[in-house]
Length: 524
Image (cartoon, rainbow, N blue to C red):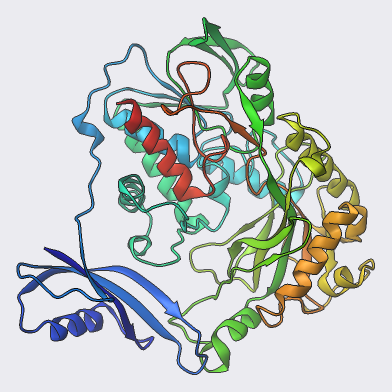
């Protein structure tokens, strides 16, 4: 029988051996084996006594008395796609090599389906060089950037794997593949796991190599531009090469892992009769503090420099009137704010951390929910137009050269233009320009963000400190559309399977990856 022991508290110097010895001593009258760590988290509620809290699973051939901390668990089911055989006609096509497309492609390849993975951007190494050039020189490649290219938008992020979905066999498959292909082992047990951008780059390359060994094929710098439909069923896809020439792939299986920024693809699908609906999302800006100040606020003076804790994070939310909520999202400890646009004449921000999380600043998105009242239309694509207008305004406010508009929190709360920055140096590249966000956001959104930032100080001391910096605009927090799918995960056009965050069914690397796995599993 497998048991799980929760709520094992230790000091911060404790390692696996210490934890295992605690368990062995506790059950010294029983024969236990196969001990493994399944969770590790930080309890910092008492600033004078910050501790680690662990959970361990082990095997015992005797019946143990269960209680609040000791429970019997079932062994996780493991998915093995190699035991199946792809017996469908033709090769499946996967559009997009982000988390959902990458994992769908891997599962298909393991079954011998020889998937064709279409990616408008570059392989991750080439993509990284183009992203670096945009950050240093402001030279944008609209098909290979922070949003588009191998690995998807999550490649240039913190690589956070926290998820609100159930940790089932699909998530287990994702974590297993990530670790086997270069992610750190600790993502299997940390309460707040992250891979880091530096590790993500190597991981997605290794998964691509595995797919290729199994007969799959990546086609970079190619884009889905049309679909052939007969009697509400997919017959072929039309692909555009980098030189503008077109070719057709006959297929009855199209996996749409296009990501939340593929606006031209959404418009094409809508015009071809693929049913979709408007989806509320959120917009706002990035907030930056000194990481040492966040550590002090979260861990207290005694533990703020503890090497076992690393850079502290936070997650905040404030509920306001008029059905508005302001919340932090994608918090990047020891990270940087990055330029993330995929369109010319637009400014978009995102956050990124490497695995060590050792940069000077902490940053997070501060977002407010937006919906039809802000879009001004019920049209399914109205959210896209709202994004485009906001990003264009941010571009103009930043000076028209891909610099981002910034504002000190003190000025933002007082409703005045920033003319000089303080002790927090904004990390956004290629550069920033002091601005007034009243020129960017509507009155209702500005006031909601203003109030939200102010009230968050009650939850995290120093959050609304005068010198903290806001950088705009964060507009790609999630997809502005949802492609409608049925109980078989198909769109209204038979053979089209919308997957992941772009299709409106996930909210991060883990859930998007698991969605790709789940849809392939459903088909077979």
